[in-house]
Amino acid sequence: MLHATGEEALPAKIDSWKMFDRIAPSYDLLNRLISFRRDVAWRRRLARHMPSTKNQRVLDLATGTAEVLIGLSEDCINVESGVGLDMSVNMLRLGKDKVAERNLTHKLNMVRGDACSLALGDDSFDAVTMAFGIRNVPDVGATLREIRRVLRPGGRALILEFSLPANRWVRAFYLMYFRHILPRIGGLISGDGGAYRYLNQTVEDFPYGSAFGDLMRESGFREIELYPLTFGVATLYRGDK
Image (tube, rainbow, N blue to C red):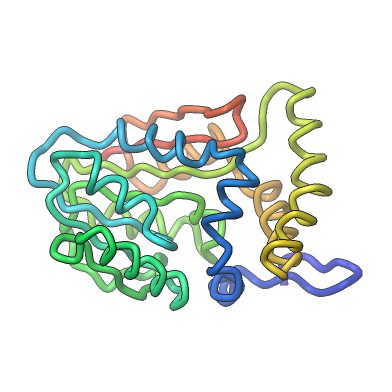
């Protein structure tokens, strides 16, 4: 287990997908609420860093309800097809419904799989994206190496993740919100307060900024760039193969 509270033990990362299965119905709504809709702007920022090659094939890891994948397919004219991969069956089911509603089933495929061990061929994708999922995997290094393996030469990884603000006053407010307010809102709406205590604790424990950039470098990525977003509460990481 990662952490325990006075109420219940929080899930180990290897089982975190089961937690996402439970909160899937309220996941998109809570993302909007707890981020004050900044999650929409963050995903658009990610899309602006997609490579410029034509007829791109994209892989979105920890795809959840396919928000990133759908956004890329609708907003990036160079994206020809995409695969969304997640361990959570209920998240994938919602993602498939959204893909079908937008008439994108001809170009987007949702599959269940483990980001630490991808059942996908080498040099298969022009871009690999991952939004708010890298901190949940049991082995970050293995996931980064798998991302690099399935990228084509010159392909790009774009990873969006929560981080801690550098400004001490912003950080203090942010941590107060994450530790005390967010779990209450999340628990009230989803019925699973533990899931949002898990969110808070994984964010605080996870390496961010230059530390995560170093992990990408150690996994073989080059031309690594870091883009703090909204006072540093999230960071976009970019690296090329």
